View 1 (spheres, rainbow, N blue to C red):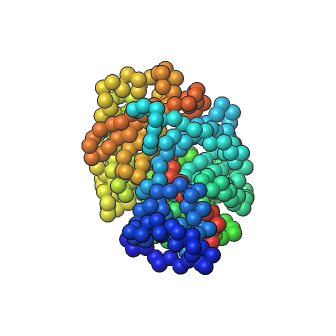
View 2 (cartoon, one colour; view 1 turned 135 degrees about the vertical axis):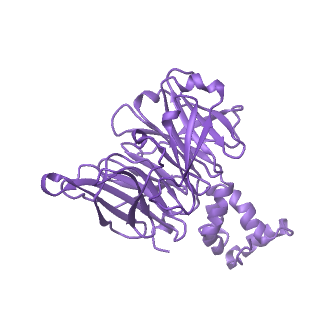
Length: 400
């Protein structure tokens, strides 16, 4: 990977010569794409004072992609509190953990915008939060930037709304999707999915309708290569389906569940990404001795329920008893293509554990999360992999 030519200003020439004199044998591409990406976000922003080209370098997409490879990876842990609409937010870092093998420490993320949220997710280092008052906030926690999106008034008759943060790597566009299920017609018998989209860089929400599709609960979701997959949908004929949203085209469609997946488990299944493909985890098997994984075959048709490959993943024997004792689970994935499972239980000594399964080696690793206290009785939780980014919100708040 070749670095772009760096043009130094006259005021920074002396600084660069002094720096270059100390490292005369290091090529520019090594400095800009091997050393710089390993620096903390705060240090990267300090380098903007050296040269104007440094200022532009740290915002380029290919540089940001390299940064994500070297940046410390954290698990963002979201716990609901006892009071409705309130949550606690932690991040736990796996790298350079000094607390012993299998131990990681959770650090609380204190911010006034976090409280009273019904939805939190993270994409490329940007956190998206939404609350019952229909406010949506985008935040870069590394740079402490916060952007409050314009409010949106739902149509009359819409009692619920759900929010999703999505990203399309092909167009480098971030969007916020809001779905609003309700019924129309005589006696309100005709289902209708109304969804609105806010593209970062524009100033308003754009609304669309999808007739004949009903979302009957808050959907678990995963965004893969510019496509958002969601569960908990039903067509007008009563058939249960998954929702599909194209970030680039702003369009909704549907796809079938695997033929072998129990219909009663559609609502509770977890959606994750494994090596660029969609996978469904049947959590009903967790209470026995493992999990059932369904992987969608690449290139298969969306309306083909037989184009899924079923796989059973066993737990280690020593986990089985603890897993059966009043545990709550959440499944996600990390950038290494591994399955990440979060578990909480009030009947074991560990309030929160993170279990990671490597698909290639077929092995599990267990991490006990320290400093997370008494959250299991308050409800479900979620895990998201979190990597800090040097990209400013002001840089994505305009079409590029």
